[in-house]
Image (cartoon, rainbow, N blue to C red):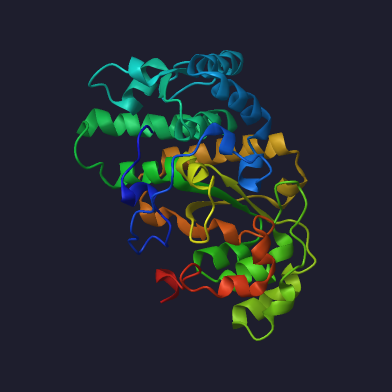
Length: 327
């Protein structure tokens, strides 16, 4: 979505039951993208090419996006062929989401926020189309007003700040939902697949002795295990924030249970399965709201941030909070 969304919709730098002051980051440039970062690596092949076009000119950048859109023939929320237009070409008074649904044309500015939004349309086109369809349907009913309503707020949270937490391990899923960070990130460290397709290894598992009972109970099962969970950054505002990562940067995690065989599939097959499965769930969820997500401090993800190799990294209660569900 263009512009900076409301604090409630985008700035999820603390778990969702708290309200944090807005954190202002300097506006980044395309040259600031470090494709070696694991949260950007998922987009690196296409993103590097777009980056060079964006650094050349706005016109060349839009041409590059539209060449890929023409080749892919993705569809927006109401079946229109995906394309990209300059922000100034959005008709005056038109709703952004309704315009995309009706015409297929995504108004796109020459900035990082919209750059990452465009990448999401190619990484998970069905999810993006479903979000657009539901936003447009809500606008049809309620119009565009000062408040979005609970469902539209949740759709915006997903679009802007979600990560996709794919898990084949109920213990890890429960640890995430229960704010049991030691189980999720320390005892379960070896179960996390990293951006390069490896697992995060056993660094940090030595620090589990003396931790909560749940951690001790699962440590034996989770250590030295093959990958059973992974994360994809979906939200484009979240990717923009991760240009300059900081410890409290927290995503809204959408949990999806995957079959054990998932982690043996090629990456393209996994992405297609996630795209189809999550888009269907989003379309069917009539009660979507902020509690449909679980907060996930992204720099705690094993293999994503060197300091988290030390288990004491997770002792910062200002970042790794006990959360409402643990109270």
